[in-house]
Image (cartoon, rainbow over all chains, first blue to last red; front, side, top):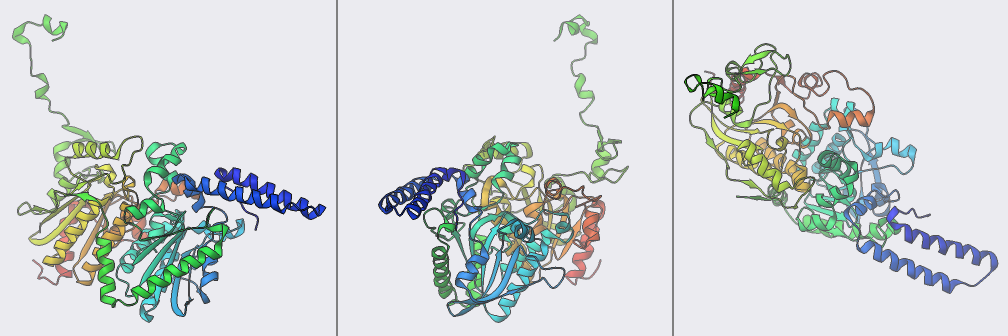
Length: 318
Length: 285
C-alpha cells in the first residue's frame, strides 16, 4: 500500500521517497545497496518516533481523520468471523453511515455496531462521510434490543464527525433518535463495550457510546464539538482551530486522566494505518479480556454499575 | 452640576428629575414591534398581548409564575461550576462563569425547585438561557439528576423547561457526558412509573434537545420555539439549500410528530395540572 502522509509527516515522507527511489535503482542496475536502504529505514523510524513523540492535539486530530485510517469494517474483517451485516431500521431506511451486524469473536457471539466512513469519493458519498441520520441510530437501537433479547454482548466502534446536519434528519427527529439511544443504552440488559477508533464527534458518537467499558485508540479523539466548530463559535475564526483542539482536551491521554475513557489502546509507530493487523489484534485482545470480565456479572450488577458510572460523570464544587 | 444648570435659580432647580420617570415602563415587542406597557407584559407572563409572541424569560421568573406561590424549596442551590480543563478561548472559562453569575445572580444555568402546581406536588427544573446560553455542563447535569432523584424518592412528577444552545463547550467531553447522565436518570424514573414532562421553550438545541429534552413521557413546546439538533446555520452551510419555512419551529415539530402539543405559556399551568392528574390517576378537581 502506498502510504499517504500528513503535512507534519513531510520529513518522513521525503525519506521514504528516497528509500523507494533507491529500491528501484537497485532493481534496475542489479546494484547492492541493501545496506544503505537499511540505514535509511532506521533513520526514518527514528524520525517518525521523534515526530510522533510530540504531536499536538490538532496533529492528533488530523491523524484520527487520516485518509488511510482503518474503519469499522477493516476491523470487523480482521477479528470477527462469520460476520453477517444486518440492514435497516424497519421504519424508514437503511443508513450506510452506520454498520450493524452479528458475528463471532473468539468463539462467542457478538453484536457489532459501528460508524463507517468511505474510502473513495463514491463510497464516501454512499457512507455520507460517516455521519448517520436518525434511521442509522434507530437501526443501531433495533440491533441492540435484539442483542438484549438473546443475551449477546454489544461492541460499538465510534468513528464519526457527528450526526448529519440535514433537513431530512431534523424532520425525522435526529434529537429524539439520539436521546432514545442514550436512554435505552443506560439500561440495556447486556454488556456493552465501546471503542473510539477515529473521530468521536459529539452527540453522533455518544449515541452508540454509552457503555460498560470505553476504550480509545491512542491517536483518536473524542470531543463535544469539532475543533473547527469550536473555533468558529468561540473565537469567530477558523484560524484558531489548533488552539481549540488544544483546549478542548480531546486526546486519549487527556480523556484517560479525566476519567472519561477507561483504556487506551496504543498504536504502532506512525499510526494505526501503518499496521492494521497489529492494531486489530490489540483491539481484539482488549475486548476479549473485558468481555470475559463483564460476563461474570449478573445483569442487575451490570446495570447498577453502568448507571452509577453514568451518574458520576461531572466535576463541580459543592 | 453643569454650567447651564448653575444658571437656573435654585428655587426652580430640580435635583431628582430622573426619579419621576422610572426606567423601562415601556418596551417594544421584538416580533410585532408594538410598544407595550411593561406591567401589562409581566402580568401576561411575557407573552405579547398584541401578537402572542412568547418572549424568552429567565428561570426564576418562569418558575415563580408557574408554581403555586407558597411552599417552594430550591434544590441543590449550592452546586457551583469549576474549570476542570483550564479552558481558554478569547476569554477564560473562569471569567465567563463569574461574568454570567454576576449578570444573572445564579450559580449556573439550571434552577431546580420543589413545589406545588395547583396543589399537586411537583419537582420543576428550568434552564436559564441568560447563563451562557443555557448550556449544559457538569452543574446542570448534577442538578438535574438530584432533582430527578428527589422526584424518584418522593414519587412525584418531574417537569423540565428547557432553553439551551446545547452542551457547554468549555467543559469539553465532560459536558457531552451530561447527556448520558441525564438520560440515565430519566430511564430510572420511567421504570418507576413517575411522569416526566418536558416543556421545550425557545431555543432548545443540540445536546439538550438530543437528551432530556426529547425524553418526556409527554413533550410540549411553547409556540414558535426553535427546537432541533443541528443549528439552522450549520444545516444551511452543509446542504446549501434554503431551509423550509418555519423549519425547526414548534409547529414544524408538531407536524413531523416530534412533540405532543403546542401550549400557550398562559395555559401551561392548567394543562400540565390536567395531564398530571390523569397520568397519576388522581381525582380531577
